[in-house]
Image 1 (cartoon, rainbow, N blue to C red):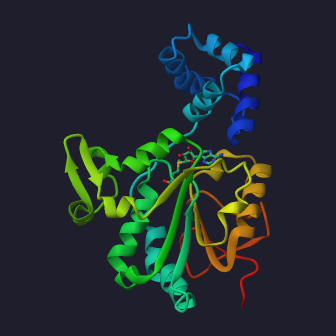
Image 2 (spheres, rainbow, N blue to C red; image 1 turned 60 degrees about the horizontal axis):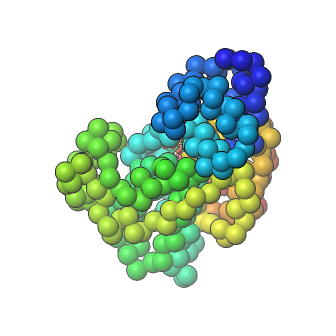
Length: 274
Ligand SMILES: C[S@@+](CC[C@H](N)C(=O)[O-])C[C@H]1O[C@@H](n2cnc3c(N)ncnc32)[C@H](O)[C@@H]1O
């Protein structure tokens, strides 16, 4: 791979999605972009980079960005965060929102939907009294392809075997010739929309719970700081931010503090009333 092509793609990806490629990722670029070039009828990797440079096709920029995102996810990923939600965070939020009976939740890198659907299933299973609350649940991702899959709610046998209890499969999914589809009542409980975390998201409004798991790891410090601080402005003072197991605010921003009642990566706003 030409050094100039590598540098061009690194800069392009940083600007388009925040992905900090770093050095030595030629294999990653080729393994994701050669199949894309082939599917678009372009001669080879170089042909794709040249086409991207010409900048004539906005859809090509989006396809390259999407091809380079890592969409790995599973139901009830890491288990502990969902235990924390069940035992600590949701009971606490329900106590402070008892009067208004409204919760606003944002899942900020939803990928193919397993994370938001896991949370909806948890709400149904463990907090039946929420059935007469208004749960405003937004799930976003930069990838329209992933969001389409999320919204469709169709999962393969392999995907439902990863993290999903059989009791949930039976209760919340319908069997489909192609796999298992999340029941409409669960799908309709989440509003999916395309959102790049590099863009301004202030218009989403204030949230009680923000889940931003396993996406900050791909960004550099400056990008993490910008995203976290803008999220901090949207998090209600008594709300919670959940990050992925390998992610932290430490050394990035002082706008959050670790919420010590939870073993998983849960943060409270530094503005939290004591
Ligand atoms: C590894 S998945 C994490 C999915 C889920 N949160 C989990 O923890 O299982 C990361 C997701 O972040 C999305 N993503 C990457 N860059 C993004 C950006 N700049 N804005 C919004 N989403 C982004 C990717 O499309 C991908 O679906």
